[in-house]
Figure 1 (cartoon, rainbow, N blue to C red):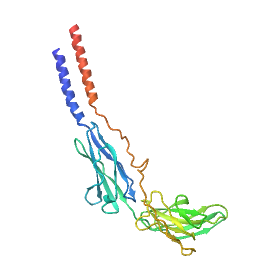
Figure 2 (cartoon, one colour):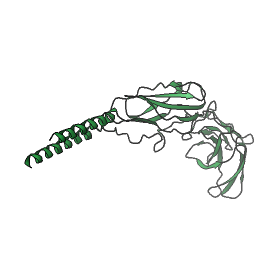
Figure 3 (cartoon, helix red, strand yellow):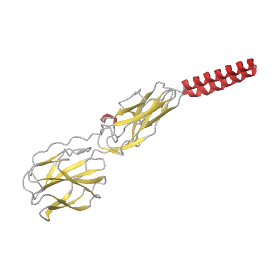
Figure 4 (cartoon, rainbow, N blue to C red):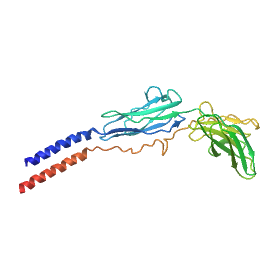
Length: 304
């Protein structure tokens, strides 16, 4: 009997020593990867913190322009295990360039997340040049143009309309042409038989900034909204009418700054937001089973 009691006592001491480590909790935090480039300071960064014993947490985000010191963001002191930080213009204290981020969580012990980075670029690329068109059949036009020389240039959007005045937006866009900076391009675009079409071209960079519009339309072409893009610093959605075309364009509408809508799938979506549960009930349950087994052996020995 005494031997059984000693065994149970020793096992309980071992279990409590192990339980102390469990009760200390496992703490971790992950900061989701943002897009590599952004053309707006109005976006969100998402985090996921794990505290296995459901202890209170406080999470803060820190930002650093490459080569400079770290600063805390204006949006701060998050107490949820999974959440987001809203970035704003004041956080990007040195304008365009590469910025780094990490999150810090305070709990029973402090911990830093992984570091993520993105490049802020709000400057639009130059417009296409050497543009002209040629009608090569009763249904097809051939467009000639040269892409801008900006190193971060990515592609050209082509818009088309039967009207002499139209808006260059998703409703009139008919083609997307990728080309290297400074490359000359030729593309054929078909349409209805014996219909006169007018075209507009707009360059975009890797961050989604949109250039001025170049057009052959004699009327007014409005530089419409480019999904996820901004006209960048100082472009104001200008429309450039080719010198050889007749007509003078009227002032155009300013293109609104692009927005990051939470990202892919959506961007920045937090996975596994449920809060982990404590392991304490499982340990206590183990104690109960152990005690029951001890009582069983004691009663059995008395019966023998």
